[in-house]
Length: 234
Image 1 (tube, rainbow, N blue to C red):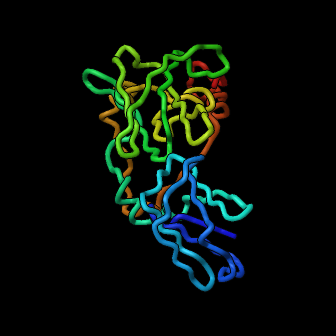
Image 2 (cartoon, helix red, strand yellow):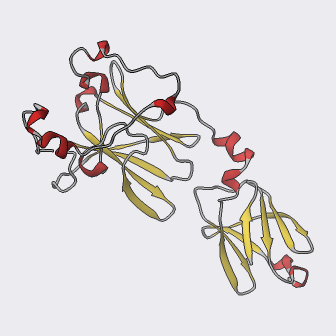
Image 3 (cartoon, rainbow, N blue to C red):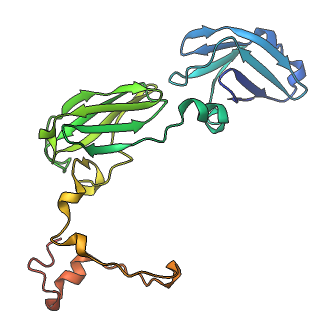
């Protein structure tokens, strides 16, 4: 037996011998709370369950029939236009430094809560208690603001999704610390080398004309002709 949400109200259940199943005995739960079923549409090879209220995707949904109970995934729902219309967002995501504050935004409609964790060090192997800020959600987007004094710090998110809590790096981070495990609060324009704005790039008529090399910084800096002061120290 397989089931999936296809809208916020509708579950489709496929199984062998669907016509022989007593669908009237089916029950739907969000966590342990029952959800009222509005309509049961019996089909030849499947059954449609129409709920009386939209499902809350931040909570797991289960179906119970006779002595069997199984989870109903949301993966098909996430692909629908209905989901897109409800949670679509095309604004800023990540971390940015403004004139009077530092702003964070991350998109995660299924998250129950997200906390912002600030660290002085970009290396997680150093023992350090983070400074924790609770982020507020609006329509699937979690946001938070901190003082400019935290510029130069590193950050992660503590995310709760269903019964799991994990510390993760910002998927929209523009710079990271050691091994990419903590995102950096940084103004990239302040990291530009002297006269960077005067740098000229090679203009190509076609991108396929570009010749691109990939090389280890350690290897290229170890050559005595590199003129790098601290070679082989990367």
